[in-house]
Image 1 (cartoon, rainbow, N blue to C red):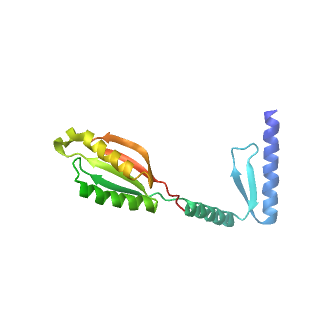
Image 2: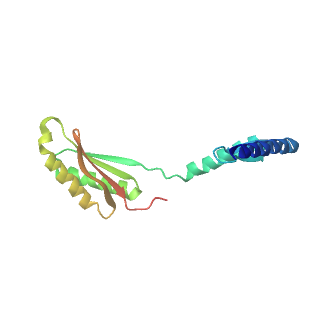
Length: 154
């Protein structure tokens, strides 16, 4: 029974090749994994051109995600915090993602609880323009928190 299917497939391929030659076009295999393989009779160069055009349209429709970073120290002063918070708010209003992190130098890693408090304070201050994607997490000498904009990107 399997042999019959193979013979039919070969017969169909020969018929398709003859038809393509008759029409002075190319036989293009679309999917070879299907049984029988899916083929199309068309001009190959035009087919390639249309494929590139479709890929270009899909690439243009993709949303490009921009990640902005803001760096704090574990003992950031109130004025510096407000200044950086305002920048973070602008980034989120633009529709960018925000990566806020506290960098611990040397022995300042002892103050990791202060760093976490600082990042959580930032999250609560910015909750009307952004939502937290990743809670503060210590990675090496950095405590990182990710926020995404609530605004829909067009």
